[in-house]
Amino acid sequence: MTDWLIIGAGAAGLACAVTASSLGDTVCLLERMDRPGKKLLATGNGRCNLMNSQGLRYPQGRAFAADVLRHMPYQKQMAFWRYLGVFLREEEDGRVYPVTGQASTVLDALRLPVQEWIVPSHQVRTISKRAEGWHAACDEGSFAAKHILIATGGCSQSKLGSDGSGIRLLEQLGYPSAPCRPALTQLETEKEPVRGLEGIRVRAQVHVLADGRRVHSENGEVLFTAYGLSGISIMQCASYAYGPRSVISLDFSAPLGLERTELLQELEQRKDLIHDAPPFRLLTGFLVPRLAQAVCRQAKISDRGPLRKTDLNRLMDTLCDYRVPVTKLRGFDASQVTRGGIATDDFRSDTLESRRHPGLFAAGEVLDVDGDCGGFNLMFAFASGILAGLNGRKAPWEE
Ligand SMILES: Cc1cc2nc3c(=O)[nH]c(=O)nc-3n(C[C@H](O)[C@H](O)[C@H](O)COP(=O)(O)OP(=O)(O)OC[C@H]3O[C@@H](n4cnc5c(N)ncnc54)[C@H](O)[C@@H]3O)c2cc1C
Image 1 (cartoon, helix red, strand yellow):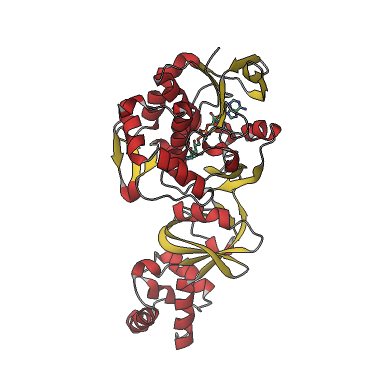
Image 2 (spheres, rainbow, N blue to C red; image 1 turned 45 degrees about the vertical axis):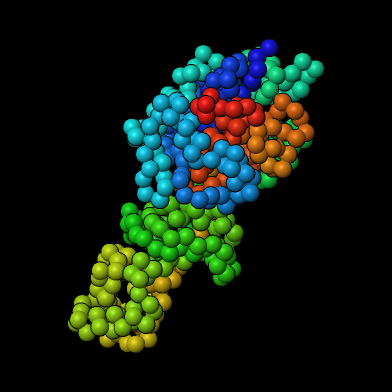
């Protein structure tokens, strides 16, 4: 009998398959798409940001992710990639990429050693435990093995494979799950605050306000789009901005490094310099003209007439707190990762085996763990897949 049935040939499933086969196990990988690893190819804008060397940034499932990454830390994952012949390069903020700059390098390294065992275009409908082992039923037939790994991902970007069906496979066996919603996604917003700003990128401190109260903050790049807001810091705010009265507050003064009093002094000096130029020129050197105009509009600064002290105060307040009300999160089709999924309590963090059903394993995004942008999601998917494949054994790349 085959040693492993792996449901889903994505990041976690392939990592498990390569690891188990390196220890002599036989493997069968069932994949619903016509090819393995479609999502992997799309990661990191096609460059695959596969790890991060700095810290643990997991807004959901942090304790479980930390345990998994304690068993399969950064250095051990580096050794795994070296064993597969993938050379890596670290870039800004600890982000790690293959030196080729191509996600296909990572996919090829994972896929080629197990190519003959990948069964594409097979969607698993149910799984069950029988006396002789684990079974997976597809429309095309059924498959059996001693162990089974559910590595079917979350609900994000179903065109790349993961459609939430793996979560249901485990729910059918009685495993509880947290409701799924998109995380790391863009925000649709009211039109007025983003009018005319499409394409502008700016650095800002970003705060999420829920009923006027700050619930989350990020620092980084914001991109204005036709529908609202995007950019890494916005995507990281998304899972906090789902409430009906969520507002994004952008502090454009943060990158300037000026105290409020210094900022006010600066604006007062500029007022004397710009003479009769329109008031948005006060923000020259702080913001690009289109954004400066939008800030003046929100601050209700008139295009005509002398600028008073109260106008400067309002301008400064708006520069530090530009409000963009959120209308909705962009959905699963736009999100990079899913918040929610199968509760981790039933799975061991050292092997990813179920505490309730020996021989049943779950790894990657199907579990209720999600990370920030920067390689944290793939790092968890790979770490959990490798640990499942090792199943408590020593890795050949550690010898
Ligand atoms: C555009 C984009 C860019 C991203 N960039 C990054 C990045 O640079 N760095 C990072 O860390 N993370 C990134 N992510 C997130 C990361 O890709 C995922 O968190 C990661 O792929 C999850 O791995 P997984 O193996 O759990 O699931 P997946 O990689 O989604 O693989 C699951 C596989 O299971 C298959 N499957 C699902 N259900 C079934 C079924 N019932 N039967 C058979 N097969 C099934 C799917 O077709 C799929 O191939 C990105 C995501 C997206 C969408």
